[in-house]
Length: 307
Image (cartoon, rainbow, N blue to C red; front, top):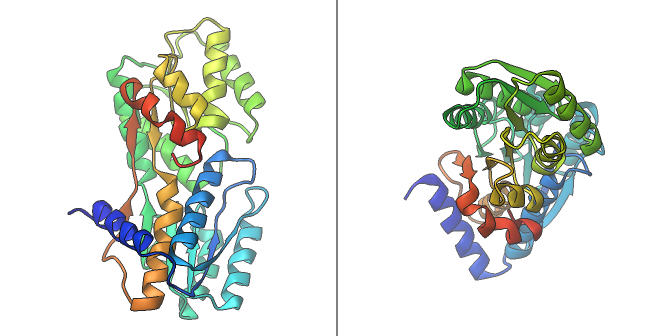
């Protein structure tokens, strides 16, 4: 049984057993409040709290703010919880706070971002995907589908994980790639993608780094220009983008199963607090490519905040 299946099996046993642990766990994530991706992570956190009986708090800054996030981690350390879960989009900014938690004897698990620095900072393990590798896989697939000139639309420049996705995409695609920076505003994304497609007819490939914030607006931009043959792919899932994939308007979505990124660390820390149990290595939650053949099957789960 591989690490991922073992992790899921362990979580399933906990869920079946019902609430059992009086454990305090704090989750500090960098995700912004208006990002649907992070609402799914939070759903996983809350489900794990319910299944284990642990007292779980989910905290995140209202904007992408590393100073505020480091302060949230410091505040969590002062509470002396039984476990701490953190995402690490910027190790330089957050590393000292995470290391303080480890020095205080608080078990730490990183999730979503920070796989490359997790163990250096003293975390027990990481739940997530290799962002560079995922970008490379997406780039190779888009090149195989006929793409020759691409743009990578980054709605959170400075987030190391998102930057790595674009870098991996450029390597895997092996054709010219331009990074288009935007804010977390679908209207701005649509306008910028449309401008990129209008200004260069050779751009035939678009990679978004978030399905609802980038993927869906990118499809709208291409459709408005009649550029039906533009290949559009996006990291993560939304019901709307999955429908675009099912309808043939988008190529595929890259699923990192963020529900598990919220769920599994809480379960692991609850098990650790009660029994001293912990998996022996990192848990890869993705990437998985959701194509036209499989998109329809997960639309309903995405709408429910699970996929």
